[in-house]
Image (cartoon, rainbow, N blue to C red):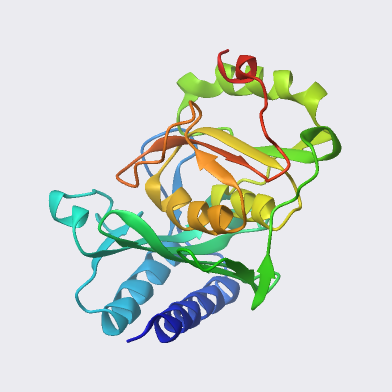
Length: 261
C-alpha cells in the first residue's frame, strides 16, 4: 500500500473510532493506578476496534496502546512498524462531557515517527502528517504561528497522575505567565500540541506524558514548523514516558530559567 492510501486508511479508522466516542452513553468507568487516572469501557472498545482495523491495513505492524495490557514498548518494536494508539486522549474530559477528547494514532517506522492522525470528533477536525510532507487539518495545510510568545497564548498539562510533579508544574506556569498573553489547560496533550501546530497558541509544556499521548501530536507539530523536545531540549524517545515542550515558529527561546524551577 502506498503512503497516500495508507494515511487515508488510518484517517478512516480514526473517523470510525470518533463515531464510537460520540455514540457512547454513560460509559462504565474504571480507575487505574495514579491520581484521577481513569479508563472507560469506551476507551477499551475503541482500542479493540482500532487494533482490529489497523491490523487489516498493515498486518506486519506491532501495537502499543494505552489499554488492554499493550502499554509496554518492547525490544522488537525498535525495528519495523509500530502503531501507537491512544483511543481517547482526554478520558476525564470524556467522562465529564468537557470538550475536547481526541483519537490519536501514530505509526512509527524503526522507532521514528512516520505517520500521524489525530481526530477530534466533537468538532470534526482531522489532523494528519507524513514525515517530511507537512501537516494538515481536514486536508488543508497548517503551519504554527510566527508570532512571538508575548503576543500568543500558552497551554500546559498538569501531569495529573504524577502528584510529585505538581509544584514544579505550577511554578513553571507562574513563571511563564508574564511572557505570554495568557495560559490555557485543555486536559489532552495531543489536542494541545495540535493547537500549537495550527496556530491557536504558541507554546505547550507538560512534565510527564506517555508515548501514546505525544507520538502522533509531536509529528503533526513538527511538520507544522514547531520545535518539539523534552523539557530539557532533548529529542523525544518514542519508547515511553517523557516530558514535552512544543514551541511554535515564532517562539525562538523562552529563557532557560522557566524550566529550571
